[in-house]
Image (cartoon, rainbow, N blue to C red; front, side, top):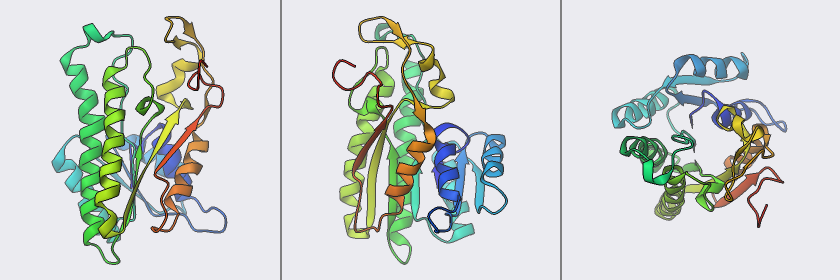
Length: 249
């Protein structure tokens, strides 16, 4: 299952998982997201030979998440992988002092509560199915380590997601459930298009930033996904090589 599969990194990962690679067949991929039309576009890009299930769902709604996992269980009988990807940046250019509560709450609801609801539903399914077990990969961010200016909601939720990853990883051990996190920096998607024209830096200047192809992220997720459950990539960072993240940029 891939959440946020209608665009960006979610779409790239869904396409990578669905296709044959290295002589291995593609995964059967459940595509989850708020926009049904976008999920249909992802399924069409995967091609007629790909096995996909499109399930419109709002990850902030517990009932919608339960219905999502019910649909996948009814179709496939089990869940072997969750790429917990759905997320939002929140309002851009709004300083901490002026951040509305509603904006804070929206980012927390999607990035943290939504990730929790999906991880919990996947955990329960993986614990109860036979053969037991599965893998959860949370989409973190380099913001789980280092913030950008005016990014308190996004940064706080990504730091919290790291704690969720560690807790699920530990609690999943008795049930053969592996949980890891991929921290992504400057993948070229609709959400990061502004980076190529200029984004605010820590010193207040606007500067363009290098980006990388989202397909490079997708291949890393596939590697994490296809490890045996006895092995786990706990944390991986994939970033545009020259982005201003390491040291002084």
